[in-house]
Image (cartoon, rainbow, N blue to C red; front, side):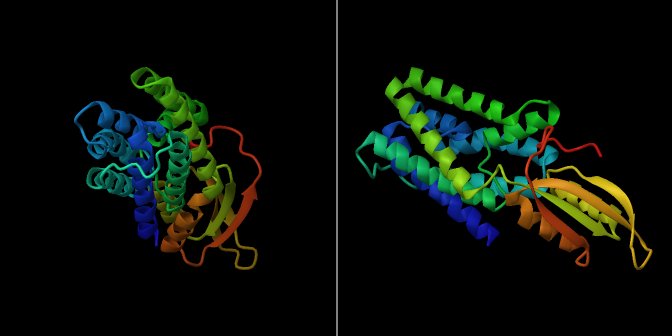
Length: 271
């Protein structure tokens, strides 16, 4: 189901780009928008540009971020790049504003589905996560700044009407993504297991989160156990549950909603 979701979400993005946004010179957010620029002003196909721009970032991300997350992202980027290369650009609607709104909504739908399947569409998300891991810098501010650069470039290369339509598209995309994939919703996971070291290595290898580990003792059995605590985004929950059961199907797991997180959430804790 996860692979199916990644395919469907990626193809929806391709349809939004080639049938609504690109024919009207409206850009998407992030590195996808820069790929569109290359496709519009050079002979390079948008799909090929998207792959070439994302590939180095995904390689770096594979070494620095969660492996499953990056593998899913690579798969999504490949589907999008091939789809943009194969599916011809054709304007479904004549109105630029209508295409900006509907194309942005479809993009948000596709991105939201990909996010819910524990992946990403690459681009600025990967850059933001890498920078946030190395520097104590707010990732939201960083992503907003990079998207602002895309809008400004759109204005200088094309027209300021195109830049404003790009802004509309990015705004609608963000609203739809928030409705589908609740990035702001955080969960606190407490894991009690007798396979502490194995669980620690498995989670840190496959999940882009840190862990706090404490020693515990069973109230009835008096056996020693490890208590692990981490905070994740809601969309990561299915992946985390799968990772836990792969190591210890009998682990006791308590999942609670988190109202607020202080500190740099994207940066793994050294504990």
